[in-house]
Length: 395
Image (cartoon, helix red, strand yellow):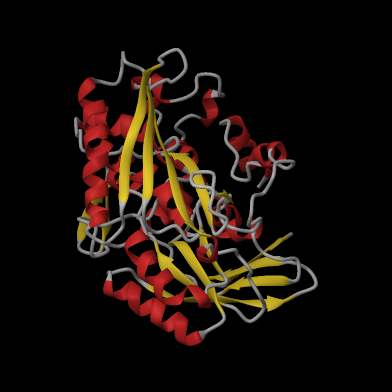
């Protein structure tokens, strides 16, 4: 584990973001300190019954992977997936706080103009609206405001794609996470093909991409595309895998190339979350978007008197099996970095509500099931039992 942790550090990434959390430790936590996103007073209109949420996120280093795929295959459509990644990382976080409609979105794009063409920029900007139109078909109202597209080649090696989102909602509609002993955990799969996706989704999301890219892909990419990675990191942690993006693996009856698996757009749960929250808000003790931190994300929101037991998880999708095989990471580390099959979980005290949520997901082609429970404990922990192995994370 120490060797792999050193590898993370050498690549300049951190699954735990300890330095970031330390930096923000003294900041005000907002009106609802345990909400998934920071909630502030209604600055927009000054109504004491309302509140505001503003959230920012990016597609992260997934853009570097998209750059490689675009350069190797010429497929301009790969950038549409990056748009979805960056938008979804905002929307699904905010939905876990209760914001499921009437959202304003603004883009921030920084590119190296010598490497990223105008066609790429045009694809990103125009698809932003097209994707929001798709979400509107599910009753999710999002307005695209202005944005900033800057040529900053001295700062950005290829391209960075991010969005900022704003929502105004009633304070009574906020989901302030209050996980309790006795809660049931419902998990919603991150992989497969939902009713609103056009092809198989590998389940990657937008976290852990630096590790996945360097651990899976061959040294070919270091020599052919040195602009795709930080030149200050040691060469022995750069593209250490054995695969090319165009290599294929068999999933079911289909052969899918590894590039498409890694670049599967981050699945949005918004078409599910809107009806789920509308029907079951009073039965929700917490919604967790398992992004940074993977299956341990909930640790940031759990009280000190519980243990969270996840012992009925989904089968590990082929993509994460590939990453494990290429990286040599332990299962402990895999569950800390990647979602491993589900990227959304709901904590509810009501078995009938849990079954109803599973049914809602099924109608949208999303596999869902009860994946665990919350029990009282003097020592807070997350316990994951999967395929004969039990892993305990103490907090």
